[in-house]
Image (cartoon, rainbow, N blue to C red):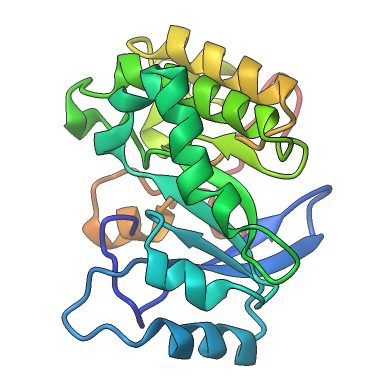
Length: 238
């Protein structure tokens, strides 16, 4: 879904915080690559009319951010993958944060709450292109936010694809899962750093795409909680 950036065909997601069943808000992904994009002001009004109070962007498009100013909608801006390597420089990270984040803040500014560092940079289809540059970018951008005095409110995080997880066929239960062997060291550094900074860990999961494609990744045996479901028992837990 993150690669299908249509203005009006939104992908809805629920912000789940705290315990199961507590809904913290309703949000959408908003990409601007479309054949017939709507004016940003109209998109913002559509979100407000629909009770949508969170939005995830895929860049820091100026016209989009200006339209979001004063709306009160919580915004996740993004540093595209192609710029991850540049953020290995703390000075460049500070300059990027100043231009694309703090310059939009203020009483009537944009309610930026998160900065996405790349988008699914560890996706296997990238063949490791961003493995070594993602954590330095995350660290330098968060440190730049902290130095700018907004780090307590705005957190940097790395949206990952679900393929960062690895579940061995020999032990396909939750407790047997771990990060993919080829990225486990980087993922540990990322989650440790995010934990220290109070940032969320984000994973993009598309179960119904897997179901539609019929690639065998959708857990039909127990996913629907119906009479044919086959629950998994893992170390005494079902």
